[in-house]
Image (cartoon, rainbow, N blue to C red; front, side):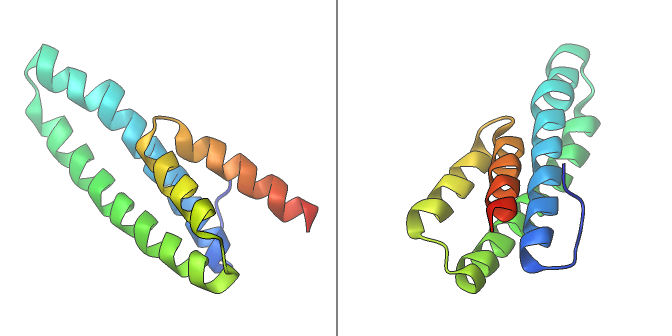
Length: 102
């Protein structure tokens, strides 16, 4: 996993991983706690944090799209990755491989 804020791509990758972590916590911890244990507060706060991270993810995705001149297909793939559990982790590995190739 990549945690750095040096470049727009670094910021995007870092937020993508954090967004993915928040999504996993929301789906597999917070929602079950609400439904099965009757503890809605966990979902409320984790959901709020995930929402903020998702908005940052989209904003940074637009930034890297424009700065690095990503294709529309690559942007759509990155966006879809944010909707699939563990998708942003796969995206981060793909971006790391691309970065190493250059």
